[in-house]
Amino acid sequence: DQQVKQNSPSLSVQEGRISILNCDYTNSMFDYFLWYKKYPAEGPTFLISISSIKDKNEDGRFTVFLNKSAKHLSLHIVPSQPGDSAVYFCAASQIQGAQKLVFGQGTRLTINP
Amino acid sequence: SAVISQKPSRDICQRGTSLTIQCQVDSQVTMMFWYRQQPGQSLTLIATANQGSEATYESGFVIDKFPISRPNLTFSTLTVSNMSPEDSSIYLCSVVRGGQETQYFGPGTRLLVL
Image 1: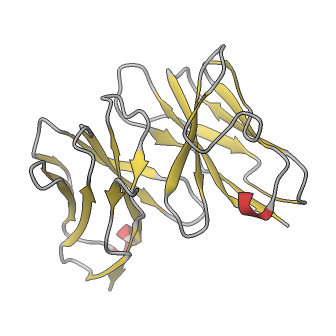
Image 2: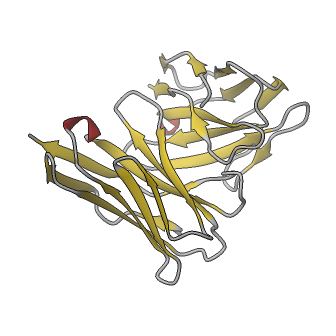
Image 3: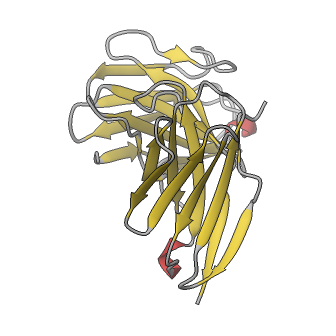
């Protein structure tokens, strides 16, 4: 039972354009959501998070949108840069405090020059 | 954020042996977790490492296979026991500081079992 799903295994975007990564979840008890970026041979790096009481959170080039009724969240990166090329994971937890994270399968983002 | 180190960074082991992975944090944290990422898969939580008491394991993971210690607020170990090739994975520790909501990950230990 995959509670957090990232249906696009890969995404290719031109440098300077917007990258949009999507994530769907099935458990309505999730109330905290995070995005991580992972380079090969490194651990996941925290990017941005959002609580279920909000529908948008922005940090520099990164914005996360949450649609609770659709059980959907997305990560927008604008403008996209070559250094953004990595695997992006969305994660969710039921308990505020980022405990017991449930991860999606990841989306490999490639930024083309 | 927290500075987290793991030892070893990678290892190649023979089936039937055991490997202990260490996770060290630069300052005290309230929560420590161990995850596994099997090849081509997502991250899966193995257990929550509880300071001074037995770890809390997720469904599908048992203490005999993955014994965990957490003697203080900055250090934890995960042992992968009686290894088989199916245990070949990246093992990651993560931490949460008191008063924060974000979980930070170590660099991972890449394990190959032959």
